[in-house]
Amino acid sequence: MIIICPSCKKRFEIDDNLIPDKGRLVKCGSCNQTWFFQKNNENYIIEQKEILSENKKISKKKQFFEEKINQKTTQEPKLSKKSNEVVVYKDKNKSAFTLSKFLSYLIVFLISFVGLIIILDTFKMPLYALIPQLETFLYSLFETIKDIKLFIIDLIQ
Image (tube, rainbow, N blue to C red; front, top):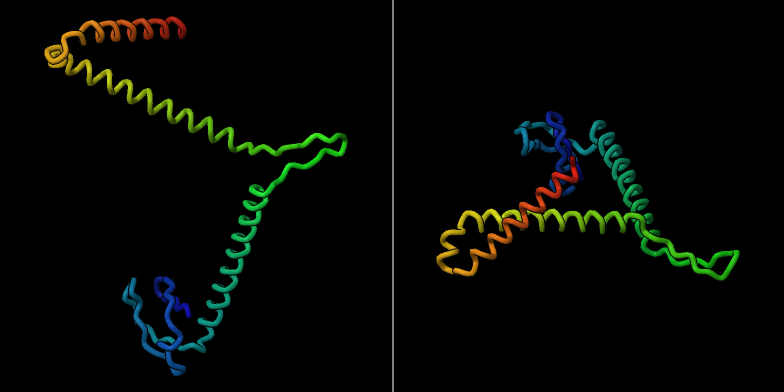
């Protein structure tokens, strides 16, 4: 059974055996409102009917969407009437999903690369002391990045 607080309209699901036929004093756990509740109360019956109709609407919507999902996943190739060619249904959302997935990986890669460059630039002197050959490599890397930057600026202008 579902009891609705008259003050804050919060719904509570309780066991039917907890409320005797003559009624009982109940207290809302949310707003601490106390009221006497009877099963045969007219407001309670109307509210229960509204709850049942809401649940039916929700279950109908859920069933509708489940059917749509099942239709998409169970579509089989059909034979064309004009020829014996097989017509295959392609999921339009799949290509958009793979493109967005690719772009997200690209963004993560670029951010990681920029972070690595910043870390290398920040700690280049201690790294040179540890690895002497790293100096020429980092110099070439930074020069290449400057060239790419100038190339992009030229493209924009």
